[in-house]
Length: 371
Image (cartoon, rainbow, N blue to C red; front, side, top):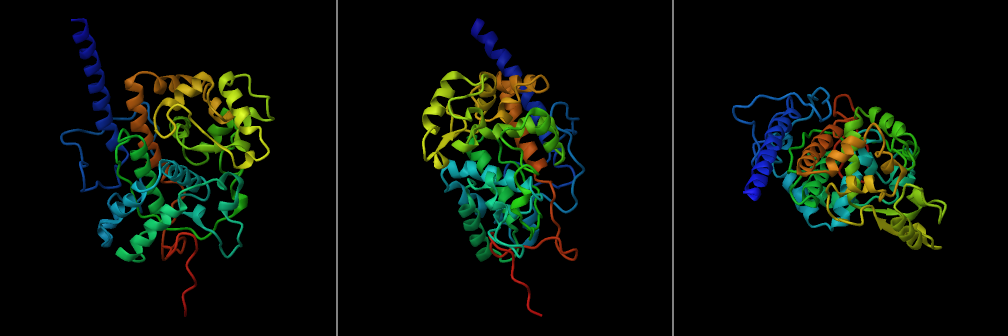
């Protein structure tokens, strides 16, 4: 009887979360249209419930649309990108999520982070210190090459990045983050400057909570979005010089777990530590999951910006995501929503305004058209 009672409680909990999820997940697509593929489609007989714990959504952009490329005679665009992502290693898949974040936070989601050189010179965003360890460029270029054969001059590198980050999130979470629809129609930017990266747009690893909150707010994302997206640090690796909580060597932050501090010092206190990497989450390194939030609470995170979430203003939300199955399911849902919201930042439009273009190669702006 006791087991039946527990199962009944669990079933009701899952039903409650599922109900909230089915209502909430559609609210972010109002104004973007709905996809016609897969299991997606407007919820039958359901209205749109007001959001309570997720972030407030900005007004929909009339230049982005779910299923955008179906109307551009390139209906296989997203599947082509997914094939490229599926074939990547888990480490590179993690890098694709980070690549999308680093792109959107500097000049908006315009693929400026992919540029190797522009008319302004060779010192692009890729040369900025936080971006020197970015991965996944080859996956994006492989997808672009395949798309140029299928439908040349149609799919932007900015949209490829957004699709790839979605695909990697779904794969690394083992489907717990649903294969969510991505509004598309972004154009590629043609400006990329190293000076725009560190300190101006990307939150540094030593940022405190106030700095993090303000830097996310500057991009139209609130504190809830910041906590949710920080969960991306449950995957990927970090180079030793970036781990400010053990700098200088053998002087770890007093709030860091002593065992982790000792392990990091042993690994990183070497002459060649500039190229040495450690997992951001050494418990479930290749799983995009809620272990990150457990690590925040136990002091097993690498950066001051991670430890900052264990502060008065955000601790309860961290506890909820680190807690029971209800909190976990909530985070998986809101991570997808926050990724869609982040994908709205600084979107470039195309002609006749001339803000953006559809690049032929993701690493270079298109050559000037002959008169």
